[in-house]
Image 1 (tube, one colour):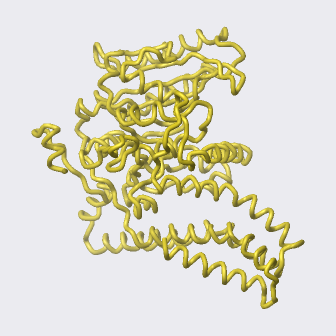
Image 2 (cartoon, helix red, strand yellow; image 1 turned 120 degrees about the horizontal axis):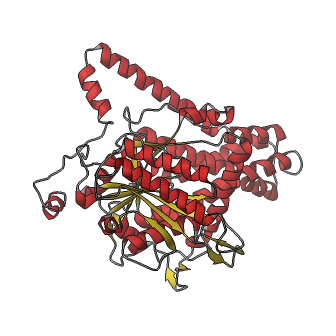
Length: 499
């Protein structure tokens, strides 16, 4: 941190001196220059700080059990897709996606569920609701007839009713995606007062669910990635441990998020998607670096991953007030302590049109600014009780950093206008500073490509030196260390072994 401050001061001085071109500024002029450079220089410092961490600190994949032969009953998991649907085609697509997830991750102790909401409406019930639920139930039952063992259900459907939201002025699913997860966790713990009015599947499975893997509607769950995620979170060394006040996880992890890649098909649909994505990276060849995890042992949760049901219920079901949070992922990762699974990759689609990309960015920016109150010392909980905000300094910085990045496009535009009108110094040099700041991701990526090329040469040299067997073993293990399941030991002995 001290080095970052020194780097920031040096960049401030260098950029200010270069922009002035030897001209003498008044005190007000220097103040204007320093204020105008604050955001661009902050982007240089943060970018190169992250890059330096990635270059100096090697990625440290988390230890895990090898569950490739099967997930034990005590680690039973539910894979869920929270969704809002209004047509049979949307239901059909999600049911097909659930089937693909199952085929890639078959196990008697991994279950799959659709968590559905109806679209917003002026009334609590619409004429199409019953037909839509009946079709969804039919598709889930068909999947169970095809794949489930006799007397059991692998696939489940949980559909919520609409509730009146006075803030939005419509009937809608309570708290949207966050509400679906909160109420589903409460349902797993035996709460009968949720808004899940339509249910399909064996309810006796629910109390045994220990972990939840939550995915978006367009997320792909590659072969046996669920087994590897469960094996990581179930390892005693990685399991979450709370602070004395039992307000957040301070050791281990309550939630783990895999790396997110962009599908090749999505990337090839438009030049925009191709430019902003990196398809084709192989997570089994190397573990990607996460600066927060590498330096501070705490990553950022992005809404797709696996979490511990008990920890989620204790820390989050009652903590966040209604109608105040849009981007709940960062808070969930802060309270549960998110850890990255850098050697496991989930595949997502990318917006193919600029307007869709901008709409998504607009939602993210709105969500970031709705988290501003969590930088204060106290925030009300779900019941309206004012409670202290027990977030780590890392999580608070992540909130601030998101707000800083949200301001960058506006700051660049304002500086471009002011550099030709009122700001002291050479306008051309102001423009150069702004363009350099905007191109920082590209410059950083050039270094990443250079590193990848070096890795490719090392692979070629290893193969040419007769090291095929060793190299293949390293690649197949994803560069990570594994722990075998200790089937002969009870859980207490396993925990003692990792204490």
